[in-house]
Image (cartoon, rainbow, N blue to C red; front, side, top):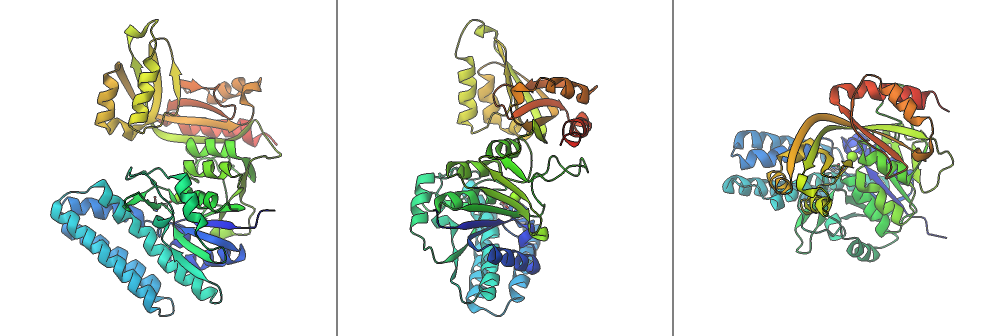
Amino acid sequence: MKRSLIVSKFGGTSMGDIHAMDRSATISIERNSSVVVVSATSGTTDKLISVAKLASAGNTKECEKLVFGIKERHQAMINELPKNHMGLEILSSYFTELDLLVQNITLLKELTPKAHDHILSLGERMSSLIFSEVLKNKIPNKSVVLLDARSVIKTDSNFGKATPLIADIAKKCEQLKTDTIYVTQGFIGSDAEGNTTVLGRGGSDYSAALFAEGFNATVLEIWTDVAGIATTDPRLCPAARIIHEISYAEAAEMAQYGAKILHPATIAPAVRKSIPVFVGSTFEKNLPGTWIKKDVENRPAVRAITKRAHQALLTISNPNMLNAYGFMGEIFDLFGKHRISVDCVTTSEICIAVTVDQPTLDNQKFMTDLESVGKIDVETGFSLISLIGNDLFGQASLAKSIFSSVGEASIRMMSLGASSYNFNFLVKEEESNVCIQRLHKSLIEGMK
Ligand code: ASP
Ligand code: MG
C-alpha cells in the first residue's frame, strides 16, 4: 500500500491574518499534512502587481505607499508571534529585496516580465515564512522546514505563465526528506537559469497539485474560503448546493469553463497519479466539502452549470479555402504559437468561429498574425455557459429542456460532441444570469 502523504494547500484568505494562519496550521496538523503549500496573504499579489506598474510609470509616491502597506501588514503579523530572530531577519531581507526591485524598475522605467515574476514571488515568500513560524510554534517537536518552491518547481522561461517541467520536478521531489513537514510557496517556480517564474494567476492550486504528483501523494487538499465546489455560483442561484463527489473529468471541465474555485490546470497532475483531491473551507472545516476522484458513484446527466464571462467570438473566414485544406491547421498553429487556448470552436467550409477571453483581443501580434490567415470578424460581450455532467450525448430530452429553459435568449454559438461531459453555448452577457438561473432550476434543483 502507498505510504500516506498529504499535500495541503491554503489560499489567500486562509493566510489573511495571523488568526487565519493559526486556523490553517491547526487543520494541517489535524490532517497530518506533510507538504503545506500556501498562497500570498489575500490581496497581496494584486498589490504587488500595482507596485510593479507604478514603479515602471515613475509614480514613486503611490508606489511607496503601497510598499509601505505590504511591509506593515506582514511585519505586524510576524510581530504577533513569539520573537524569532531568524524569521525577522528573513522577512526584513524580503523587504530589502522588494525595495531593490522597485528601485531598479523605477530607475530603468522598464518592467521586464522577468522582474515582474520576481516581484510577485515575494507575496508567497512572505506568507510562507510567517506561516512556517506559526506551524513551528504549534508543533515544536516536529521538524518543520520552509522550502523554497523555486528549488523544486522547475519551469520553462515563459514568465507570467510558465509551464512546469514534470520530470524535473519529480527528480527534485525525490531528494526531499520524508520525515519532515515542508511549508512552501504556491504559484512560483524557477527556470533552468534559476530565474524566478510564476505559473499564472491563481496558480497556487496548480503548484500544490505538482507537489502532490512529485511526492506521489495519497491526497491533495485544497483549503479555501468556500465549503467545496457548488452546482453553480451561489451568488447567482441561492439554491446552488455543494457537490460532495465529482469525477476528475467533470471537475476539469468546470475549472476550465469558469468555476473559479480551482485553477484549471490543477486536475491534470492529480489524474496522472490518481490522487484524490479534496476541496474544503478553512472556516468550516468540519463540513464534508467536495471530493474529486477518478470514479464516482452518482453520475447525474447535469452536475453543474458554469459561466465564463468576458468572451469574444472571432470568426475567421477565407473564401479561398473552399475545397482546400490546411485552413484550420494554420489557425490552430497560431493559437499554439501565441499560447492562447482555444475554448469553443465551430466550423464551416470556409469559416471558423472561436471563443477567446476578451483581453486576448489586446494581443496585437496575435491579431495581426490571425489577419494573415483570413478575414476576422470580432464580436464581444458574451458569456460562455457550460453544462457539465455525464453522458451528455445520450440524453434524449436534454436539448428540449435546455432550449425551453433558455427561453427568449439568443444562442450565438453552441458546442456539443467533443466531450460527453460538457455542453457549451454562448449568449449575450446580459442574458447569461437569467439563463443560468432557469437552467439550474430545471436541470439541477428539480433532480435528485
Ligand atoms: N497569489 C497568487 C494569485 O493571487 C497565486 C494564488 O493565490 O493562487 O494569483
Ligand atoms: Mg485560488
